[in-house]
Image (cartoon, rainbow, N blue to C red; front, top):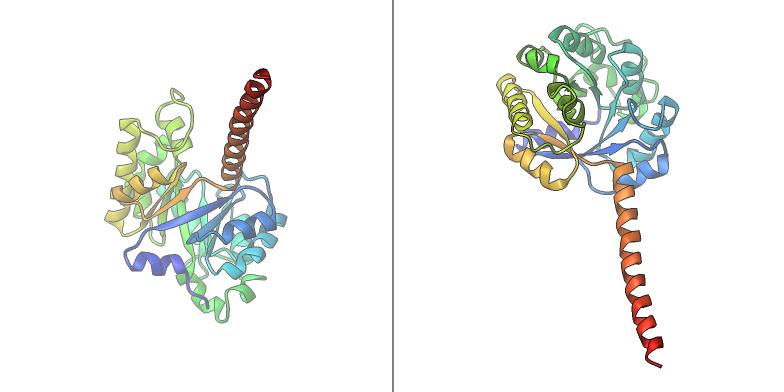
Length: 271
């Protein structure tokens, strides 16, 4: 079976950068996969896509050789197992608030005797290489999302869940929940309370030998997160990157065209 490259990167003591896909299109997925990320996650929860988009997106990204992940909509065995069968090497599960939910999530990620994943890797049987049934348990990554005040209260117990590979922080929901709606949900928080919460999550992960991941808005904030001890950072995503590049291009055109128009007007007025 093809090995999980994220595990190899982390085993060398290096951090990883993760890409994020919210647009349900194989071509945009293929473009993102050619940009040098270590892994890419398809967002089935909030992305403008569903499972029928996920499979061709995985197919389009196969040639990149990177680790492919999926964020599922909820703690539900059907979609978790279908994402794995489609070829995901890891699953990010939202709104894990208790150790019991974390254990339930892990059980859906592993074949017996380590879990209750049903066998039927329709595409993964081909895309992941030979011996999938025997090796998949050791290659799949289970990331529980900590993004509520309740989850923070149960952080130590969640992080200690046997078989859990990491905690993925959703800073928007975590801010919304911890601050009880006093702050708008957003990435790259600077509030002391939020930075303290992020560092607390890192400490719990390190204590239990699992990985810490954070969704970021900018490379600068992601670099700070790595300094705090995060093992993986997601930097923006396809829709936001597209919007930012388009906005920058249009703004630059407006500026340059305006300057030329002003020069032309001055020249005309001189005659």
